[in-house]
Length: 243
Image (cartoon, rainbow, N blue to C red; front, side):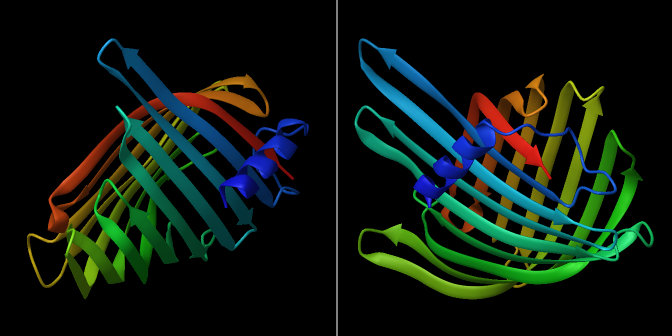
């Protein structure tokens, strides 16, 4: 998967692109590679964050395919080996401020103690603000969670539950030069109050070319059932293509 992302990213690097969707534009893809390296007399650490996105959009439907892989080590010890892949869609998005959404998401995460996790569900969303350079959206729905969590070297927690999934999504652009966007999820189990998941991502991008941007990304994730969380702050390049 990582080699495929890297190959696609290299292809997009050499392709001329436009800056946004328009009436004849229905596809968008992007590849981002960010990271950080720290070396001192006492040791070293590094973190690599790779993300690949593919979007299809028409007047009534949007389909999004997102993949990310975070890998990190500190003083020779593994700190992150986290992979996430999701497929989601929006229906009747142009008819009104309200529309429907569906989601299927697979996760595995060393830092969050997730061996395997499958989330799938449906819900409704509402566009509070929906303009060319400004968007604020909220959504809510039900998810089915089938998980295998890491408790100890000899014990796994295999369970399933239904969750309420609330999301706040936003994007603001200034003359197509600066872009800030974010996705924030709160996913509570309907059965156990202490069982909740928080996922938050905020990106700040500065356009270097129409197809290339310098990006700083802040990520916070918590799985309260395993009492684990991670905080990632890194920077790098994002390449994108509209066609």
